[in-house]
Image (cartoon, rainbow, N blue to C red; front, side, top):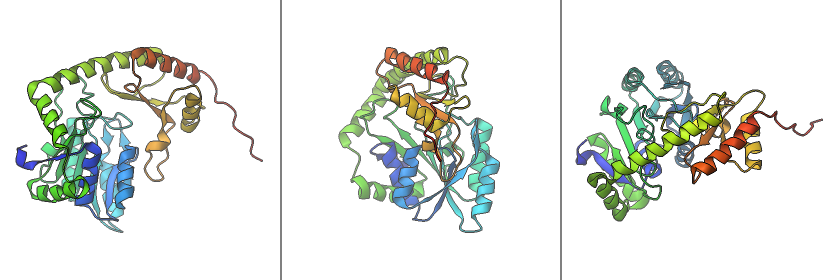
Length: 313
C-alpha cells in the first residue's frame, strides 16, 4: 500500500476506536467471532455498536455462519461491518487458510460489509518464519481496513499502529484521529519507522519468535496429555479443560495458587455459551523459570477435582 492510504494511530486499540467510530454509527450491527478479544467489546460498548456473534471453527469464522447472520439480522436492520483476526485469533488461536480467507472476503463483498482486519498477532505466530501472511485486505482492498500494530511485535510501550484504508476513507479516518488524540506521538512514530527501516524490527521479532518457540515447547512438555490449541511461536495457548472443571472455577483456583489465567467467559460475545476452556499467556512471565513454575502449578491443578462449592438450599 502506498503512503497515501496509510493512517498512523496511537496503537492498535486506538486504531479500532478510530475505525469503528468513523465508519459506523450507534446501533449499527457488526459481525464478529462468538469468542473474541475483550478490547473489541469495550470499543463496541463505548460507541454503542451491536456485536453479532458468529460461529467459528479451527480456521476462524465460518462462511456459512456469516451468510446466515447477515440474512437473519437483515430482517431488523442490515449488518454494516465485520471484525476479524485471520492471522491468529484471540483467544482461540484459530488461523484462516487461503480458501477460508477467500470465502470470507466474498461474503463481505456480497453483503456490502466494511471489514476491520486486526493483524495484531499475524506476524507473531506464523507456522514458520517464512510463511506469507496475505491479509483479507489484499483480496477486498475496496472495503477492508488492515490494522498493523507494533506493540506486540516490538515493545509494549511503543504505541504506534498503521491502518491501511481504501482511498475514499482516508480523510474520514484522519478526522477520527484528530478528534480522539490529535495525532499519534511523532517521537514514537519516528522511532517505529527507524526500527522498521534499519533492521531493528526484524531482529527483535526474530528474538521474540525464538523465545516464544521455547516457551511453547515448555508448555507442551509440562502439560503433556492435555489439549493445547496454538501456534508454534504464539504468545498464548487455548486450553480446553477436562471434566468436571468449569472455566471460572479453574480461573479462580489457579489465581488462589498465584497463577493468572483467563476463562472462556471473558471472551464470549453476548449470550454465547462460553466453552469450558482458559487462555494461558506464555509471554507474560518474566522468565522461562517463572513460566515453568506457573505451568507446574496448572498441571497439578488439572489433575485434581474442583473444590466443592457452597451448598445452596
